Image (cartoon, rainbow, N blue to C red; front, side, top):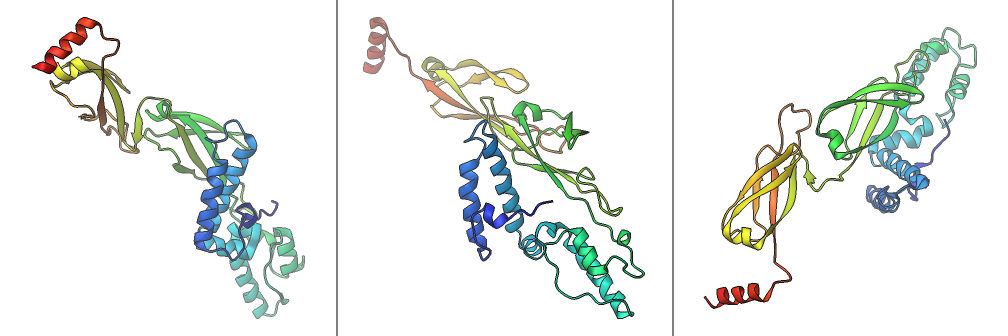
Amino acid sequence: MEFVDYYKILDISKNATESDIKKAYRKLARKYHPDLNPDDKEAEKKFKEINEANEVLSNAENRKKYDQYGKDWKHAEEFEKARQSQRQYTGSGGQQYQGDFSESDFSDFFESMFGGAGRGYRRSQVKFRGEDYNAELRLDLMDVHKTHKRTLTVNGKNIRITIPAGVENGQTIKIKGHGGPGIGGGPNGDLFITFVIENTTSFRRDKGDLYLKKDIDLYTAILGGEIMIDTLDGRVKLNVKPETENGTKVKLKGKGFPIYKKEGQYGDLYVSYNIKLPKNLTSKQKDLFRELSNL
């Protein structure tokens, strides 16, 4: 695996503060966001690199490991255990190892530490956890309205996963054991899937609640009446009270979006009325309005 310079990706120095990292990430994320660069594969690739760099450098513990071990930072704990084992080994008369760990790969690391022979210590005794994989899954809002199964292809392998209803945009779930293969008999890494959910409906979503703007005519607003409202489960009839004001909001309980990992629970649907004034009035209609005005 080639070394990836996260500092270079975010265009910051190695002495950058937490605030510097945050500012750099936000600036680049806005520039390369897929919504602003539709069908731009290079921008999409750059956006993923920026997110990966931010995930590592914005976490103090991960940043420390990355600064010390470079591309092998995810295996820092294994390196420390191996080094501790070597110290115990040299304390009992084994050969001495000099120097600090660098960004060398596993083969160089073992070769320099145990010199090939490694009296009494075999490379196969050290097990390394496989690399975690990160993937992005794009769905429509209606795709996550109900729980369903989907087959993904990761590194040539088909993985059947269950996508729970109510998954949110930007949410990440972990599929255990479906990452890179372990080394020396170590466990596989995990697969992390981030959901990108596009909303092509007329609803605005806020977690489990939905918001809808509904146009009503002036006469219905003044006199009251019945209107039909679209919900995710079909159309429902709604009574408009007489003398309803523009911007009035009504709540339809339980007609919102399913709550994530809470079977059978739904948010609410909030409908806001937008009163449309009549246009292209006839002379007679205008006279009637003048008469009302005089009254």
